[in-house]
Length: 269
Length: 306
Image (cartoon, rainbow over all chains, first blue to last red; front, side, top):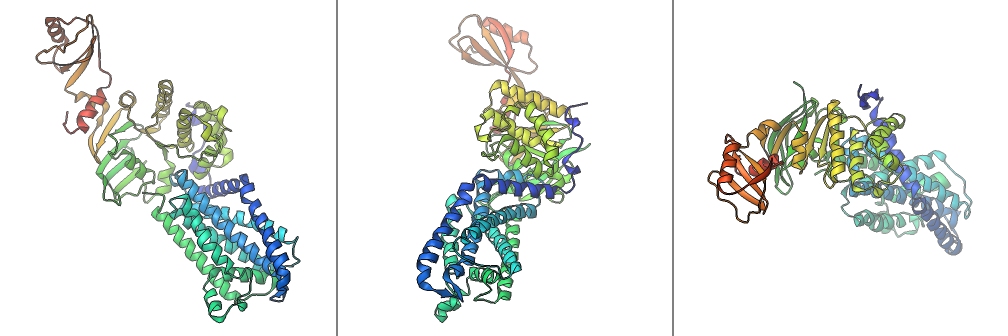
């Protein structure tokens, strides 16, 4: 009897192979960002602490109330969402681009995994990091502001939907990226400006009518305000429209990313 | 007869218009040890890239173990293992984790993967390095890791794209033994290599691809039989400084004490010795030139058929 025949079963004998593959991708992704926790978990905590000290404590005292809450409490939801958005996006874009750059993405491409499994595995990895950082930032904010949760379902659903959406967008960025610079361009030149203008630090009621209308074209405005509703119970936008936009864009991003994988964009010649 | 690989009318034209494959047909029998040879840019790696889904084909049909890679891709991929030319694993992962992940991608849970990992890493001399990051391995170890990774899901068809490139002779021989053993146990092996003595020593059947077309496809034995000449390497008793001009024989002086004589098949060696003696050349020993396949390969791919 040959020694290889000692292994009694083949890969095909193990239940649903995609489920095992999905777990493998998620485990690898989580291990990746936890292994470099000093680079992934600590910076958001430090950045948010600085935001709370500068904008909340020092400048916020002079601003007084906003939306019926003291300024420090008002900016907490936006800052948590900012962390969720940034971390979900950068986790997936840098991880997928790194796999392309190091060519170990080919390990997945030559194996019998479905494109959906690959996509969902990376997205869940991004969601995991976003939630972990979101919790850290929330804990940090508790040192600076007092707040209670107005609607837990809104908090959970908006957080998860936002993390999924920006993980998908990060994946699309990773697919198209050809250089490391391409991975940082979108967060620097698109995400950060949109986040700052998305009502993290102010209510759009403060804007002149024209700019308030323009601001409503910014999808991050809906994310921030829907989450603020979950925490504080106040919002500048309709919650229904916020969910509609968030779900629609998420579905569109999912289908687009799946189509990119099916075509082999950026990974197959 | 069952085929491990069937390729029909396979074409690949890249976006820049370069036609890498011009409609190749190829069949590899189950259990075969097969060589796919060709010069750089001939289309070998493109063909392998299409087989393992890293290159999108323009036209044609490919079946692995009878399963079409388009319509039955999960089954086809489960039966296929690929050892690529370049190191394409995560340099920051440990040797063991790379294999655990690859097993996972093939649907093999960690508990089932571990005995296989232990087996292959021990067999390939990497067990002591299982906790080392892959970037810390030597070039030869990385090559062996690629082989272990390709075998972890126990494929029926193993494709190796120049597996012994840059590997020292001792290690190369060890890899030959291992591949021969795997093949004897039933795994079909397709090999591309630049070391043609490797193909001659290991492979029962050979295809030569050139400029995107298959220009030869037969058993190694038949292909070598198509050589019309045999080259003998003669060690000379006394130094010779001028190539002797012997009618009917092509002579090349490798060095002052070594003469290569190309002899048409059908001519007797007695005639060769007689001609050499007549020209005052004394031979102390003689052997056939080993890289016969290389001669054929060079002749065929340079445009003039043998």
